Image (cartoon, rainbow, N blue to C red; front, top):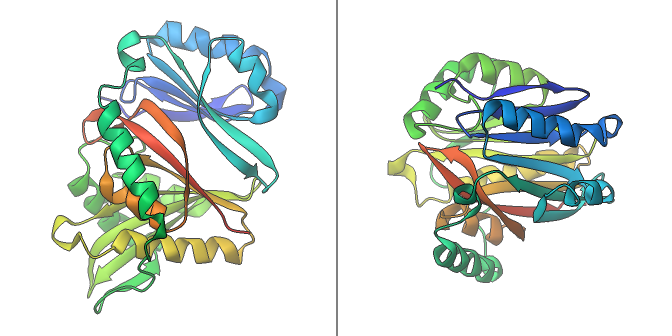
Length: 279
């Protein structure tokens, strides 16, 4: 199956394709309102997608709600620490709209929230090293991601994608045991809005349990603070105890659940949104 495309849609930015079977309105340009709502519906009809997922400034919310969208999550101060963001969904399939693991996701989320009082691990264990990735690392990184994930919503298994995004708007981070990559993550930077998505976490199975994701997160936050970013956030797999607890322990606030949103490792999964105020 072909990877989902990221492209301009009028003046806005979307990702869409059959792998996630959805449209993701990643960045809405106000010049596209209100006609983009009908344009997105037309694209769904043409492609047969079952969901539209949209990040929208709270001030533009009502136009979407009147057209069948529902709120799934919200982050205060998402834009420059001032304006709020709402994560919206519109479903075109009853099956897509229904979460079959509600009890388990609620349990994981509640346990994670309670874990927020526990201490996080700030320092990298053992003789491991952590650093910002460089272009010379992309082939090794892509091989690593392909080993961990059967499928992923963005083409992180493609070295050209890693190289191009590294140049433009994504900082990648690696943890090594001697020369071997054992964990990876990234900070997807929105310079205009002073926020970053903390994402693409992966650890080799034999190194899990060492809180390496927490170490990566701490380093990424330090770098975001250094450039005066206001907010960091993530969309974590809702059925993952480890990732939800990692963010909660690092003082992230729970913002909501995106139902059947993302294709990871071969199946569509719901995602929990967490956020943190840096400044």
